Image (cartoon, rainbow over all chains, first blue to last red; front, side, top):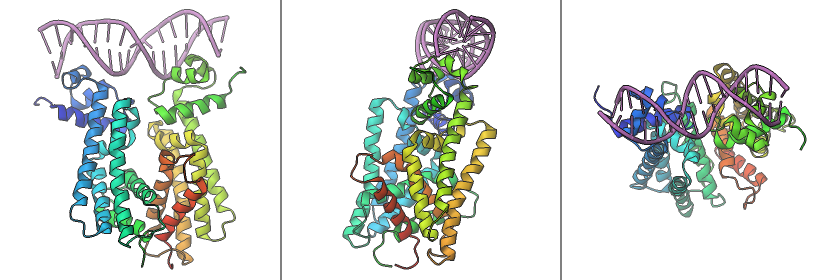
Length: 192
Length: 192
DNA sequence: CCTACCGATCGGTAGG
DNA sequence: CCTACCGATCGGTAGG
């Protein structure tokens, strides 16, 4: 029964926001989850909106770190894309609360923060787009394909995974990753 | 300045739920949108939850009608899939509020309604899965592909369209539909 | 569909 | 991190 840290509060907020949504979460709900009173949360953070910002930023940072790691050392652009896909899946499944809040609750950020996060998100999407464009340049992907649309398609698939993936199901995370890579590549790879 | 109907109220609720979320919408917000008082809404509906049920059911019925139409008259399973994709896009773009509420606010339904809608949603997904399975049987799609996963991938792409599609943009709705069909098929079609 | 309300809950604060 | 609050807003109702 040691005292909570600010990180504990942010983590708890992420769990609540991910399941009940930002507007569906009251400070008292959050306090109950953490074993303290709602009003006690204000000893750690300035307010509810600040909690949303903190959770969303954590989510953004996980995706950014994943992209940075994938960009190092890919043998070729398609290999990099495979690493981007696997990394994204890891973030979505290992940091479900932050990822889900990042993906779904951004519209409820105040204007300024929302604009800032939109830039971050676009930059992350651009990593996928550029990688696909590089693959086209190297002749690995069909030239008639719009790389940004393809990136959006892949990200749409990846972002919905946590809604249907069953940890204890038939398919492992790695199998899902390679299946999605295969699905996307089958539609993009030049030869066969 | 004629009196509002129940359908007007439900339509207004859909718009609010789609943009601000169920929990981010108050009865007074909704009344403001409609030009009446929040309390006046209770002359038309039993409560806020009933409004969510009504909006979600409208969303579900649009998707069901689209699937039923696509299943009639497809030349072959791949043609049916193309029609399913085009129909889904039409629902998402022509009934944005209901579609978005259906896709995002279902977790906030009461247990009973949520369970009922889950069945409906699974049935719709199964139309995609069965169509892909039929295409496999006819030799149009790779046998090593899991039809349910492929259906989920396609639906994930389709469900995110309204977040990035620009009505006044470079690409028409039909071009998007055929691009997505092409993206999916390139990964699924047997020959080349 | 409005007037006039109700009890409950909301985000948040002062002071310890 | 709790006690003890605050004004505002919430979903909803009685009566017209």
